[in-house]
Length: 230
Length: 211
Image (cartoon, rainbow over all chains, first blue to last red; front, side, top):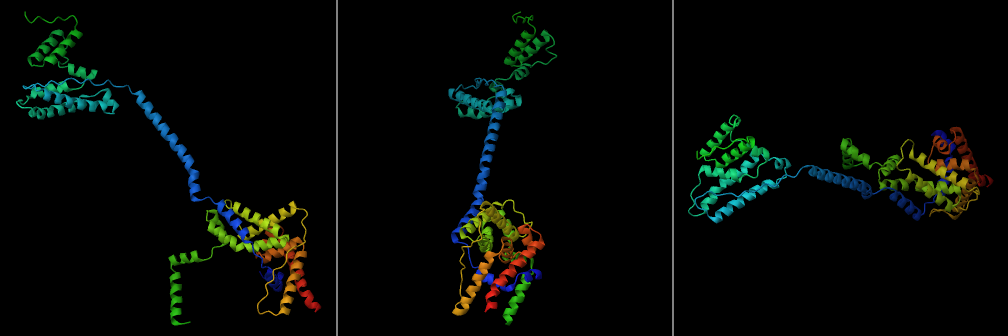
């Protein structure tokens, strides 16, 4: 620094300092400061820079998700609509109002099951899924029945029968399960199967007996039902 | 110093030794040019405003003395700051900011000279004299004549010597920094500066010796 001080004479520096009083014009200052400010992007401009790519990405993502969802539903076969069987109220009093109320309750329950989005359940509704609806309707039955005047309380068998009748149209697997009131040993021969059917009739399960008899005739077409008159 | 003042000084010194206040003290401390440029790089326009106001007049005078024409100097001045603004994103504080700034200004001037081969040393500048209120007419006239002689001598200096002198006076650059800015070696820069100062001193002393 001493060398530099020696090089630059102090008097020359002072004289030059006294001379150098020029300043920049204000309009030039404004021009340059505006240029500097415009060169820096604002916060909104930065956000705006990201806005378009983000919007495109979101649109593409949502479209893909929608298409995948649609294709997933197209792959699933539509389950047949459950057949609502008319509920027979085996009460002593055949009040029309009571019967219609039962039908409404049962149909509401069945519709609820039919509208459920779970496709797997729609495909093969198991006994577990069908039973609560039937049981609920069965449990509600006495309440409904007590509403009507002169209606006697239902027996346990009536409730069970109604529950089995109120069950929605069963799938083939369920039908098979329902049809198999007779075990495999009884189904081994036509005679033993028929004796099982007879047993069902004696127990009062006429429908089950009829189903078993139909199954028997399908399985053994050559079997001839013995004449009851003989 | 009164007792209260001494107490306050002692207390403030003790407080400033604490880390938090030391941090505040660094914030109050005037930021250097590179820090301001880095802040501007990060989008702080106010930092550029400080930086610009710190250097604008010196750069303007540097270019004004080099060109000798006010309009040309303003054009080059705008070009220089335009380049500084555009260099915002790529700026790295590898060297002193003043060196960087004057190198840009020097290069802009060289480009201007190359573009306009008709560049002449004829100056159109009129020195702006500000006489002191208590100064007598005789001394004021003598001072103004000395300044005029200095200005004329400065205008008649070779471009390289004038450039070296102005970089030293306006930019406050050292000989090494002048060498870096003008792209020559240290000895060349040093001799240019010495020749320029000697000529200017002779121009100032000339009438005094005659009288």
